[in-house]
Length: 403
Image (tube, rainbow, N blue to C red; front, side, top):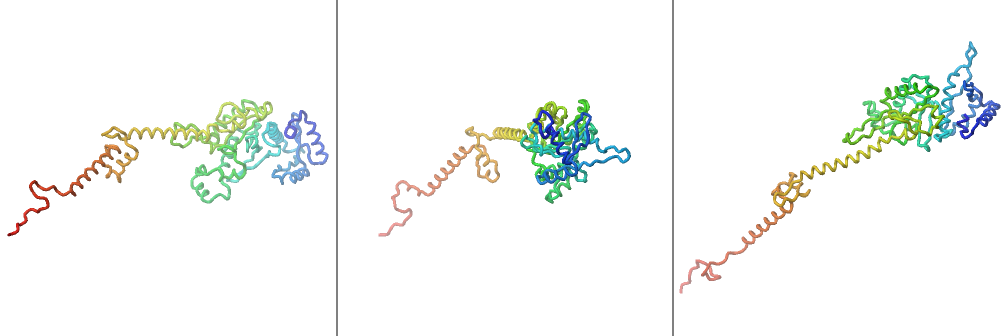
């Protein structure tokens, strides 16, 4: 609570005094004390009621009331085993807030994501920090109380949830998805359920998930991450683009993938959540959170590579076409596009004349033919010249008059 509410304070006295004051008013109580002497404070029934009245009108959901339950035989307080996990979740939120990732009222815990079969996958922590380049991030805090394959199952369920349609989805889309399982991959994210719950991520993939490990060894973390990478590849790994230029396009399609980042609470505490302490599955090395969530080899690169490949293909096809362009057998000039089309199109080739000559030479042929035809027409229209010795104007074979 001290780190979350007063990250700039060097000591927890102010937070402790406020909690004690709330305790005097019967609004909070100490639920347990950890091995490192950290105290777990929870709301009383009265405090829970007042918190709901204060926060829920602002759209901030309050977690369930933590009741005091005791073993009927031993009298031991029940449910204290969850305290360590709850403390780790709160510490995670505090580290994010300390790094400027998320407002203190922008964190939510135990947010349910209902699947098609009715199972509810609850995220330990949800942060919305658009001003920090993280519009939404789902966090799972693991103190190595879960098997690595259980984390893979969680990842699968987040992936499945990201592929669901809302109840009021268009009937044509619903029918198409029901008829073919992979049809959901052609449904825009804006039409899916997750966009009704969370804002756009600013990236092309599904809602990002972070696995944060606490109170464990580096070897155990490495083994768990290895299982996540290998067994969960289908859910986090991008695909190759289905493109006409597979050799030229090396970009990856992240649209159906859940971006997964991992880190440890110890790294966050030592270096800060804003440092390069996040590792994206499928990548080597650690990055800042926004760099880890970005896809430099994703859709932006695809558009660039595809445009470049398309332009190169256009140049290649133009060169090949130019190499096939006919050459005039008379003058040696290349055919123009109009003349080339004229001698190859069925409806115009009958009027193209000699198809081995270019347009200007064909025009010369037409001009000569027209001149010859005009000369013949004029010659046919001109009367013949009279024969030698014949008087002009007198007809041949007339009878002479008798005197």
